[in-house]
Length: 235
Length: 235
Image (cartoon, rainbow over all chains, first blue to last red; front, top):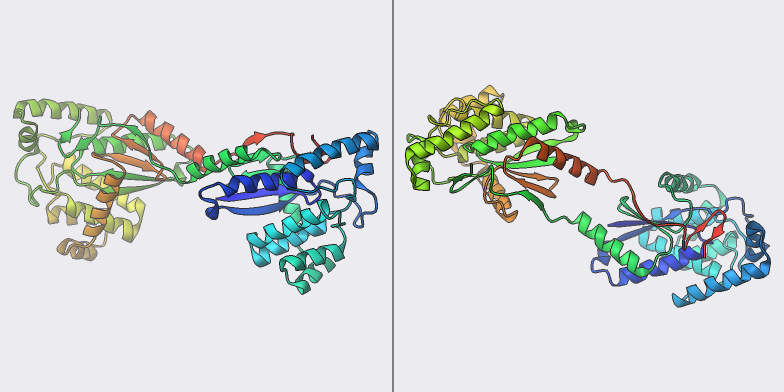
């Protein structure tokens, strides 16, 4: 069973949703047969590569609201995240670009497989939301990637060029093809989609449903009529 | 999409069911992506290899009824088959063994693929029901197999030994595992089962359902809540 998750590294609901899915997986009987793959989604491709401005001011302008109002909203998200054991520092996060983080996530998937990609995703989300780090910055990216075990030379090489930019674009195009306008966006076996960081119980139901679907028991129609058996033919 | 059909060569409902499925397939939009494979089922493994006795007498004993009553039942089957364009000669068919016919059907599948297997199945059913031939007889089998294009030397070789007897036994075991007690028994994508020569409309519905199932459109849950989009994060 394969779960693909479209997600951005600067998306608070994506981190919360990651935890909620993990909670569902922790009690799912067939969790060892589930593969999780992260797909790229850029909430703001125009964000600067070296974030200097705090997110609070940027979203205040975007919503046309005061920074105080934004901080109230951020506090609600901080409280919600705390329920999942996450220590969000939303008042300190900077407005930054995530294309390079996504390119490294593709490198991790290709070079080391889904398990390491998930580790890198976790490290990047944590660096941004719990460490208030600028994950658009190449030094931050390189250090984070190295910490989870990616090859330092390959990371430097990828960051210096534009490798995997096409893969990031393809992921975003696929999300649009699915009609996704926001993230997180979960797709199971390319069949069931869930938009948003839904409660763990919703993910549990989804896992059960998709498992049943992909491990069918024969669904029967008909009976003894119009058939022949060892004792003759029914008429 | 794969349809497996458990069937015996001396089973009148199997021939009728074959026609009805073909009727459904003739109007099915994706018929060229459907593979039909016949699986073996022996209604009477104890039947003699050289049939001398007419079927009518054998089934009369089996049912504990008179031959006249049996002929009434056979006439009903003859009439039903005629609706499908089949000319059953049930009063002339002999009680015979089908293991060798099934072994040749496995040879056809392995050597020449499902299309030729279906041709051989049709030829064997027609030889028995419309030609009143003893399809337990090796000469009849060899002639029928050669007519549809099987290699004569391989056919002779298989008939002389017990090749594919294990494949026939495996098919029958699989039918029992599915809970099938009679034939025809249709299984689509190892997921949907239909017992009996159901009307063509039933097969049409089954084809539609199985096609939809195997070519999913994303089924969505959730919405804009608990997600972040280009315009911000919903809270």
